Length: 130
Image 1 (cartoon, rainbow, N blue to C red):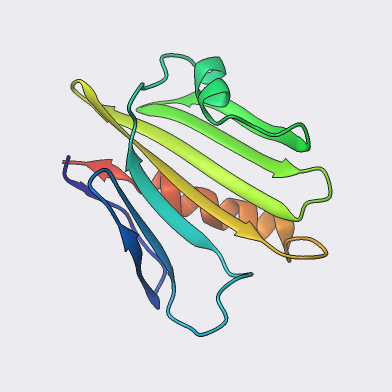
Image 2: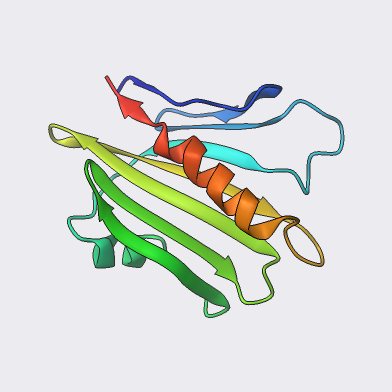
């Protein structure tokens, strides 16, 4: 499945497999920095509830937002202490669907939480299937 996604400047491919690719900042200490992954949805969700279920959230995760979008689904969630933040978007074309996950983890909490949440959402929201 061909796609485009608008990545931040300075990101490089971190890992690439047959059905997924991930990017991270091009720096030595990237552990606490945001990362982005796009993967083929093996069982695409048909409802926002299914999309949440497919995310396999941990008991420490809180759903911040879950909704149907014009072309798929959006899920935003974080750990209760806001140390891990993830935004996931599913978009489909025909019988194929891709999921974009953008996340950041930081000891003591993700900095500028709401601004980071919006930024991660913008990255995955830019996913377009060709």
